Image (cartoon, rainbow over all chains, first blue to last red; front, side):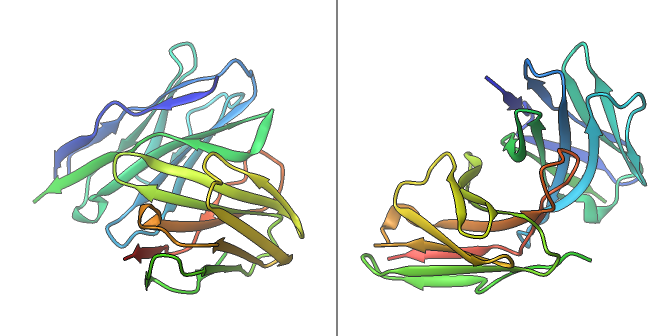
Length: 115
Length: 114
């Protein structure tokens, strides 16, 4: 069965430093997609970045990059130059070819950026 | 920009009441979703719809029903609210069946059932 695991319930990082949030996944489907979302305290889920299983390069979006290691089934989010506004919950999610409309979700990681 | 709106940010209802949560998206998306979010349990899918009048149960449909009479609107109905349905409810939409399409979320409705 497909599964998403985020093993870090909470993380701290100093402002301006980089931080890596872990996500591992499990699926037997060779075609799948991995997503990262941010949820500030206001509650709205904000899409950050997407990585497809067949993408040759790691996805990047501004300060966000995805460290995709297919053999290890990991899709870690890297935030560079952390800002105070990055303090939020971060969720990893996945879909796959046999279920491409819906997402399954990890339990999230709470990130606190210290000034 | 895609906009997903939800009828209320905060709602307080009494046990046994019928509760309607409304969600509207303005980008002609095929898919719409209702999730509930509880601390330590992450996001759990209640129902989703891939077309008008079409619906599919998610992981926790018990105690809920949905309605999609128009493409842009997806309603979640609590037939008889109970205290264990106190939660944050999130609506989302996405374009189609292509797996690269991300879901766009509304601001959420924090429902308290007393």
